[in-house]
Length: 232
Image 1 (cartoon, helix red, strand yellow):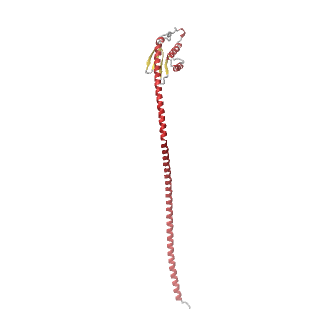
Image 2 (image 1 turned 135 degrees about the vertical axis):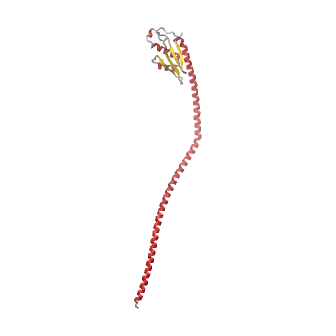
Image 3 (image 1 turned 90 degrees about the vertical axis):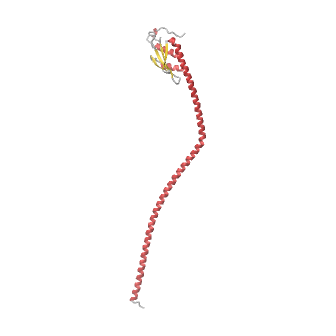
């Protein structure tokens, strides 16, 4: 059976219409698929950014957590140290009390030493006065107080050619009960050694006699001087 041209044309037209419809449907589906892909790609990019932000936030939180752990560890260490120090307080208190007791004993010893030094100083002052009084008559010696703690000693009858000529020196005792002699007129060789011997012996009378002899030796023509009057 033969198909007429009219029937062939009709079939062709139906096929073309079906094909055209399907092509449009495929195009629409392709557009939808492409839009879905674009949306997924955008979502993926957004998710990647969010993931990066989350990772950064977690990193900061991790750093903060580590810092907090270090702070807590430091506080725990301080608490442990305080606990150790608190346990040591009784021993430290006992040590402090022991040191205070020792210092109190040392202070008492110093006070006793000061009292003894003051007594020694008084004895030496008495020795000064006694020595000068003893030799005032025999050696032509006179003395006067200079300031609060010095004695000036003037010796006469030293120079036979000028009996009234004054030979002098000043003496004082310091806070450590040490004799000092200065302003010696005329200057006398070996005076420092004589003062050192005085501090060893505490014999002021002997010191005055020795200084007087040194003064006599310094006088020119001493060989012709008259005999010195001495204490019986």
